[in-house]
Length: 68
Image (tube, rainbow, N blue to C red; front, top):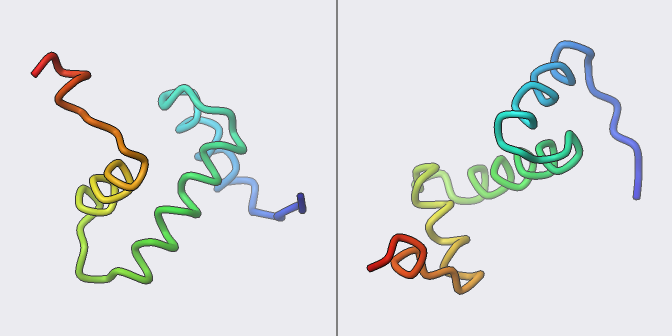
C-alpha cells in the first residue's frame, strides 16, 4: 500500500462524496481512480456502460435485487 498525495480541496471533495456513497474516503478515491482508468481505456463507453460492464464481470444480477 502506498500513499498518494492529493491537494486539500480534492481531498475534501472525496470526503464529502464518500459520506454520500457510504464508502470510506480511501474506498471512494479507489472507486474514482478505477472508473477514471476504465474511462481512459474505453473512451467510447459512457459511465453507465462502464458500470454495467463491471457489474457483469462481478456476476451481479440487478433483476434479482429489483425483484424481477
